[in-house]
Length: 518
Image: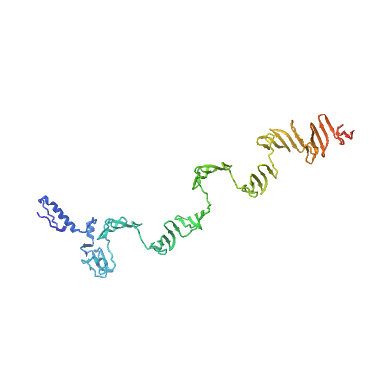
C-alpha cells in the first residue's frame, strides 16, 4: 500500500500499515512517524516531566508566537470575588469575563501595558514540576538550561544547566561570586533587613565589618585589625559564651590576655609578665621542659621530685633541691664590694664574701671588712671562736695532721701532737707533758730571756751558755745553773728559804761574800 504522507501526529493513520505490506516498506513507515513527531513538537529539546493531569491544568497554551487565554483565565474588576473556575485572575478595570478566548502576543502579554496593567494576582496555586539544574521548571525559549527549579524545602537557580545559587528556609548558598557596591560603615553593602547599618562593606582595599554604623573590624590581605582596643573586662577578642575572657590591647606595644575580667598575661617589647603559675612538662637534660627556640637542649627541667636542674647542650650542669645546691661548672659572680658582697644573703645583703683586688678574697659583716686572705697571708680584725675540740680532734689542726693542734678544756688551752697532750696553759700556769722539751734559746742575753713575762719581758729564764741556765731580773743575771753546781752573781743577794717548822721560814743568803742565816 502507499505510505502515509502525514506531516503531524494528527495526520497519521491508526490502521496503517496493514499486515500484508512488504517488509521492505517498514523503514519508510518508521521515518514517516518520526517526521510527524518532530514537526508536531519542534521546540521540545529535552524530557517533558509533566503528567497528563498537570498538562491539562495549564492555563496558557503556547501557539506560534501567541498566548491564547482559555476558560481558566478571566479578567475581572478589582475587588470582585473569583468564580473558582479560573486558575488565576487579573485584577483590573475590565469587565468580568473579559479576555476569555482572546489572543495576546508575547509583547503585550509580558509588558502588561495595554492589557494587564502592573499587578497580576493568582487566586489558586500554579503547580510546576520540580525540574533540575539541567532542566529548570521555569526557563526561557532560547535558553532551556537557564531558569528556576525546586527540591525538598529549597529553590534553586541555574544558568546554562549549572546551579548558581539556592535558598532554603535556613540558609542561602551561592556557587558564584556575589558582587555589591562598596557601601560604608553607615550603609554596608551586605546588611540585614531589621538592622541596615550592621553588616559588611569595602573600605578601600580591605573588608570592613560595621555594627550599628560603627566600625568593628577590618580584614586586609595580610592581617585582621580590631578597631576597639578592648579592656580586661571587655576584651577586643572574646568569646560568645564568656565575654570577659580574651585578648585586648593594653597600651602602646603591649598585648594582654584576661580571664574573668582580670589581666593574667601581658606581653611587652622588653618583658613578659604573668600573675599565674606556669606549668610545664618535666622534660629532661636533652629536652628541658623550659627551653629556647634556637637551642632546644638548653634550659630548665624537673630532674626528679623536688629537684630542679639546669642543662646546657643536653648536659646537666646545676641541680637544686630543698636541701642543697650542686653544680658541675664554676660559679662565677661579680667582684662585689664591702657594702654589697658578691655572695650575700637575701635578709642581710651587706654581709658576705667579695673580691677587693687580684688574688684577694674578703669577708664582710654589716658592710665592714672582717677578714681577708691572699696568696701570702690571712688576716682578721675580729676574734676567731672555734669549737672546744678534743685531744684526738683538736679545734685547730692541720690538713695532713688532724690529730695535732690546739683545743680547749677546763679553762685551759692545750696543745696536742698525734692525739697526745704535750702542754697546757691556764690561769694557774703552764703544764708540760711527760717527756716534752721546751727549746727557747733566745738571743743568749739576760735582758731578753727565752721564757719571760708579758708585763716584765726582761725577767725570766734564758740559756746562759752551753749546759748552763741563767736567771735574769730586770735585765740582770741573778744566778746560773750548770752540771757542777750553781752560782750567784757577786753583789746580788740570793735568798734561800728553808722551813724549820710550819709557818717559820729560814733564809740563807750571800751578802758581799758573807753568808747570812736568819
